[in-house]
Amino acid sequence: MTGGEQVTGGEQVTGGEQVTGGEITWSGRFAGRMAGIVRNGPFGVVSFRLLSVGQLGSTVGDYCYAVALPWLILSAHGGTLLLGTVLACYGVPRTVLIPLGGILADKLSPRTVMLTADVVRCALVAVLAVLAARQIDSLVVLAPIAALLGAGEGAFLPASASIMPSLLPAEQLAAGNSISVAMVQVGSLAGPVLGGLLVATAGSAPAFAVDAVSFAVSAVALGLISARQQEPAAQQAAAAKAPDSDPAGEQEPAPGLWQILRQSVFLRLLLAVAVVANFSLSGTFEVAMPALAHASYGATGYGVLLACFAVGVLGGTLGAARMNAFSKPAAAAYAAFAIQAVAISLIPFLGGLPGAAAAMAVTGVCNGFGNIVMFTLLQQWAPARSLGRIMSLVMLAGFGTFPISVALAGVLVRHLHAAPFFPIAGITLGVVALIALSRPETRTFGAS
Image (cartoon, rainbow, N blue to C red; front, side):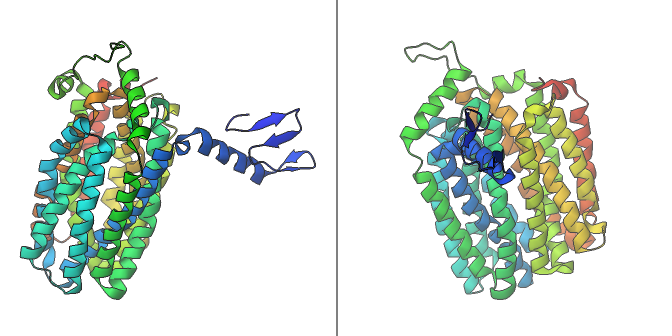
């Protein structure tokens, strides 16, 4: 038997299974398999468990913030123009800091960068909670806080994308990425609902306070990942990437980022798709979506939409844990993005909140599956000492257009309303996904 089960003499079964009259009960078999997964899989690594718990707590707060910020601005009659401007103030520093975050993750460690970013953002959101309680919502006050939060996020993102190979062996990366994102999505189920209820009943300030506490939880969890736990796994990952390195510790210099980019058609395609897709999707989901919900569904309905998306992402990430079952995983990921494009196009046109929620769930499934597959393929392929910078380049492509997208959406939604943004974004995503899928470099990347 696999999964940590043990059989002795064909009669006794250990590892948590229950034997009744010589037969193994279903609950006992399930418990035994789960115990084996915990012992032998990513959850068997203490540092991985700490990372997952920290990100679970942080995600609850992030979604409370995601509901609280637009409601603070829109309820004060600031309008979508002010919302788009504040989001742009957040997005510009985030974009600028992403490359630096990748460099720092390679030079220092992903854990150090993530811990520092969480501590700073905890303090900033606590200040935001105080301001919201005093109903201070002017651009002069919100813009600097949004800018500093964006800078912290920019440093955090590439580090969070590159930390996993330092915690887990290569063969557990797909499972580790899936479990980690699944844990985040569990937080995403509670966060939007909690944020919606808090905002609807008590205003934005309590939701911001929850976000500040969640950053503190994440920082504590990261602080408990000791350097001694992290170093052996990192050394093993580096050795796997460079098996012919000098045993005395002399290794060839890490390949330059532009050298890698010139040599990899797949990476160039991925970056191009990320730029085009995120330019169309950022304004749609960050401005048009809350505007649509504010007009039609209310704060609780907006929380429900975000929760349905989280449920979908949870299912998609769990499916991606078995990406090795796909002979062409990159092609499967782009096919999922194409299906996601259809679901996005239909969100405002499916008969109110139930239809929109269903479309958001499908969007989440496809998004979660495709993103996990792509990140795992990059982690397995990239040189270990360049992983932070490669991930920062991917993040930059994904988030670099955010400020322009949300600022433009803030203006256009005011004049065109929210609904037309969804089919435009969906068609754009579908076209670029199908173009990438048509290229042989995509279909063969990671193929067994």
